[in-house]
Image (cartoon, rainbow, N blue to C red; front, side, top):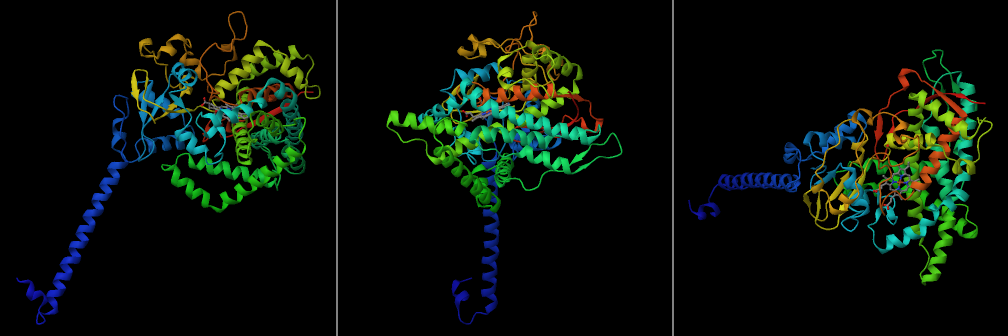
Length: 576
Ligand code: HEM
């Protein structure tokens, strides 16, 4: 057929229709083919690209979400997050393996061996730095906070200025009195609840959440939010005590918290929701546009700016971390001819101090109360040791914070250490490789996120791996961590594991890495240990934690940023 016919004026419109139909049909086919090719291409691009030689789950290699959905499902089923890595280590029978947690992303290498994790944190810091997943994630809340930065000069300057808030002198003179006073408030609150609850158990998750927020907020900013005082007022007014002695009493929560408390909660909630995002950068852009984020962020910024201005106005003797930092940054700045810390850095660093310090200590305290309740013999033994230090101490006669910091007893130290170990509040450790590296005989290229799962050595799921010393790095070989815990005892609360054969406390009796290690280890470890020490000692001297009904004994975790208990019920008796 000639083309002429197609365009001849005498040709019937039917032919034109045929051609139009042919073109449009082909266009549909071509579009479909293009679409199919695009889908295949996107799918192909999204698939994991395993690093050669490092074990992985074969079926995950061909799945769009790699191991991601398995991880999310495990988290949903058990409440646990990092524990999933123990299941992978057991499945792959290797202390080093790779997982694919999100499409379009490079694999994550997981190392479960604590000796190598300590080595990477402390002696191989040029090869492994902060960055990657953690920085992208927490950078949402603290863009200019050191926690989100690699270890460059700016990090060092900023950290140097803040480090004076963690000296023993500062902690004892400034932070301890405030922690002590807030714990005393908690003792008053629980004494009141005991008098109202008529022997019933009651939930204390919110009490512990708010007392630790009161503490860290005033330690950071010098401002007292009075959250526990509000709870005391609310508890005095409204309590429901069921007839069934097996059911818990329910106390009224105070209404109208300061708006900054709700704002912090909204911001942290956004951060939590982002953890499993397959595309962090896009999710961040979305979150920034939400009304709840914008409103909470503004409240936080305005409050922080006001607190910074107040702190500057009272420039002189430090009453909180902010005062100390403003003083020190002016001193360092004038010495080095630099301007002092900017508002942005100050806000972000203070907020990281508050959020980092709050989420972790509240969870560790909750676990502590649960483990002491579930182990009455160890609880009694701890109290006996405390009474050796402070004979006759009780809720009306508590030792001072100076005395709590100064005095030691092997069983008390062992109990606190064991509570920190078994709480597994922060079971994660993350770094990014800054260059090509070798770990346990496997080559890992630069720019890969390495997750440490040292918790694997604290949970009963598996035996530790026996590692050929030849596979270890030269620096690791020189610093052995020693043998691990017996598998059968790993999951048990046993303060005795920290005592040597002469009954002396040995903080290095076995593997544990609750605060990470090295220059990027937990900045707040000393504050956290002091907070936990004051709280545990005051609570165990003030109350006997009796067993709670079966319904309230669950040890299920809720792990998002940290690993906290799903529920925390107590049935205390006041010691007077
Ligand atoms: C029981 C309480 C706490 C636990 C279990 C805990 C645990 C941890 C862990 C495991 C890390 C990561 C370490 C690493 O990657 O090597 C970390 C980092 C950090 N923690 Fe804590 N922490 C606690 C309390 C605190 C407190 C009270 C503060 C605040 C004053 C704080 C501030 C920080 C900061 C700023 C970092 C980031 C350090 C950096 O990137 O250089 N933490 N913490």
